[in-house]
Length: 177
Length: 455
Image 1 (cartoon, rainbow over the protein chains, first blue to last red):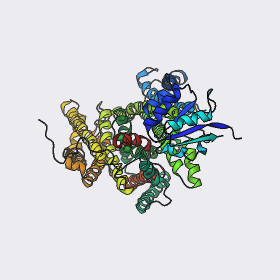
Image 2 (image 1 turned 90 degrees about the vertical axis):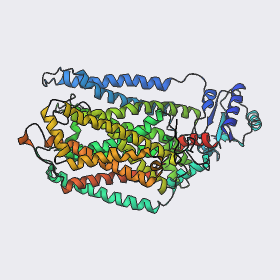
Image 3 (image 1 turned 60 degrees about the horizontal axis):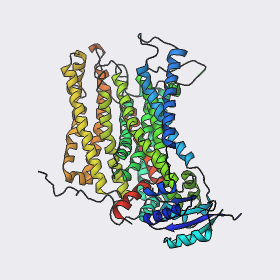
Image 4 (image 1 turned 135 degrees about the horizontal axis):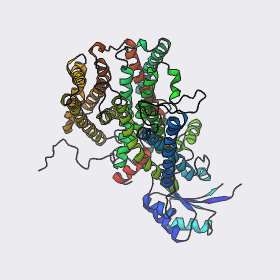
């Protein structure tokens, strides 16, 4: 029941939390995460280095599929299923079909973005061990929180707590699941 | 040589006042949502709005029981107030997306505090716009035939028609606006969840926030997607309102059959949407006493946007006159002269004064700082835009090609009741947003506060 999830530390400035994250990364920690009230620019590169192209690529791929499908629905309707001669216009009136295909493309791209964003962040996830900490709610207001997970290969609670203390953490706490 | 007028806001005028901190920002904005009792002005406003909304219910019932003959529409003027107000409402909504998406892309700092107001406004206006054409259908219950779905009747919509494009646009626009709104709202819902005291609110906002924790991975994903969404919404809204223009441009009626109408309509959306946002911002600013977050900087910036909208609209009006007068089509010329000097002339001229002449006052810095004047000018713009849509829609069919086919349009009581009722629906929805959603984007404002005020 009470396995250790990790150790969290509360910092009061974005600079302090960035410094601590750099320290953790340089000491060889790999499984840690920062929780901040707004996106702190350098943290993202420190905590999750490497390219992050998944979501833009997903949205682009869905945009192409959506445009194709949006056009096909109209093509099927006007050319294959029920061809109707309206004033001698061609059955496949592509300029007229681009408008709806464009709108449909944008709609599915937005949906891919929203649901892709939730999936990539593993949301919705209504419960998380960190919510047990009294201090964690401050991360959505004015505090910057770092948490080293117990699953990290070189995790040692004593060592981490000591390091956090030296880095100027306001508060240090062990979080249990 | 540059001249600085003494009353102009200085270039470094604060976007937020100095006393705002990260904690006070979150607590103040969330506090408006979490308060157990809504303030008195909210109940008064909501009460009036809801009464008007009930009028819409009555008007719609009367309409559905009796048919659209209860309105002033007839042959030759078969498109009356419902279609004019459809354009009007969708223009107001489009203005909300322009302020929210376009100025996100330009990185304007004033957008962070006003985008939630703009998006709540547009989400309240789109249902009003969507109702109008449905009410105008002879058989409203069959509107779903417009969806391109496989059915046993073998009935498919005509995909070459701008009217059908318009339907697709409105449906997509509504859904996309909701997604855009929610993608920006999730971090704020998490803040409200963390500040909520009562169990019920913790559970409600906990579910709505989907367990947002503010980890770097979540922020990275959210910001990436939100930026792309903004880049999608900005051209989307231009296309939506252009297609509304094509509804008319695609017809052969003199006065409608003109390629200028897609941008003409869009320019109207810029000015009228901004006008509504200015009015609602002033309401939120005083009602929720958020003067330290919604400062004069924001009103000044939006007044400038409205001024630009007015200039663009003036350009469109020049072409509205130039086309028929310079062209060789007699019917176009006759229709235009009737519009300017005929039955609709009072509405035509007062509309030009309200939307083009009076907004020129916004060149003066003291006007941009005076909130009473801003409200007055914005009201004039909104009324003027309503007149523009009204004149545009009715005068064309009043003066079609054959003089024997001319007529006039008089709105009836039920026309006015529908207008009042949709205003009620709009305000009812907006007041609900005001009560249940943080009306200022807290997460985005934090960056502004951090940058402006340090800690």
